[in-house]
Image (cartoon, protein in one colour):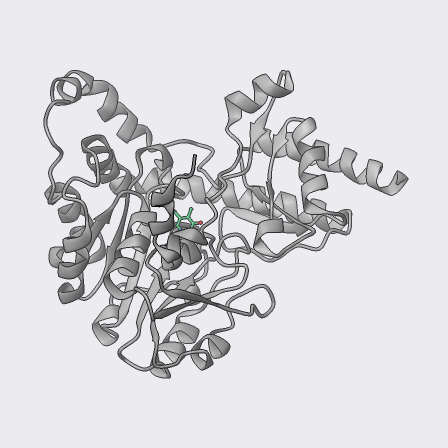
Length: 375
Ligand SMILES: *Cc1c(COP(=O)(O)O)cnc(C)c1O
C-alpha cells in the first residue's frame, strides 16, 4: 500500500532529519546493566533548579494540583514583569517560548518561507537548519573559523534572498563566543532589513564583560533579537521555558505565531523564582568554572586538544572516531555527546557536572587514554 498523501509533504519537511537528543539516563543504565551511569550529554545544570523554586513547588503542590484544569496565563504576566524588572526591558519587548527552541521557530515562521534564505554557522546549533528547512527556506551554512562563527563571512554570504541570521554566543557545541564589539561591528555592516537572532542560552556562564551582550543593544539595532533559556544555568530543562527580547513591534508579530498557551503554569511560576535566585545562579556558575578548570588541566596533561568554552560544556578531540570514543565512555557509564553530526568527526562534548561527576569522568578519561595508547 502506498501512502500517496505523503507526496503532498511540504518540500522543506522532506529534507528534515529529526534532532537527536542525548541518551536518557535511566533507560541507558538499564540497557547497559551498569550500577553507575552519569549523564554529561545535554548541558543541564548538575545542581538542578533553584532550591527556592523547588520550595515553592512543594509548598504550593496543593494549589498547583487543584489548578491543573485551568489554562496557564497566556500572557505570562508575572514572569514578564519579573523579566522586565530584572533586565530593565519593557514588557512589550518580551516573547515567552516553550523552551528557547520555540522562539527559533517563531522568527523562522515570521520571516522565512519558500524562496528565502537564512544563514547559520558550521558547527552551529543543530536546531537552526531544522527550523529554517521546515519553512521551505534554504539554509546557508557559513564555514566556521577557529571553530566559531566567522561573522565576516556570514555577512558576505548575504544576498537579496537572505532574511534571517542565527548566531549563538556561546555556541553549542563548540563553546565559542563573540564579544560585544564583534557583534556591534557585524550589525553595523549588515543591511538593516535582515533580522539577527542572537541565541544566549548559556549567557549566565559567561565570565568576562566583553562577551556580555546587553539587551539595550536592541535600542540601537531594532533588527536584533536576543534569546535566553531556563534550561541551562536555571536548571529547568524539563519544564521548557525561554524568552526573547526584541523591538516591541517585532515581539507583537512573534506573539502572533506563538500558540496562546505555549508555556505551562508550572514553568511560568518556577521560572519567575529561578530568575530571582541569584545565589543559585552564582553557585551554578562557580561549580561550572571549577569543573571546567579541572577538565582542561586533565586534557592538557593527556595532550587532548580542546576548544576554549564559554558555556557549561567543553568539546575535545578524542584522538579517534567520535562515535567509537562515545561508545567507550558509554560502556564505562559516562554518557557524552558525539559531535560527528556537527562535522566534528573526532570531537566529543562533555557537560560540566558536579565535582563527584567530574571525578568519575576524569577517572574514565584516564582509562580511555591508557587503552588508546595500547592500540
Ligand atoms: C540548549 C540550547 C538552547 C536551549 O534550548 P531550550 O529550548 O531553551 O531548552 C538554545 N540554544 C542553544 C545554542 C542551546 O545549546
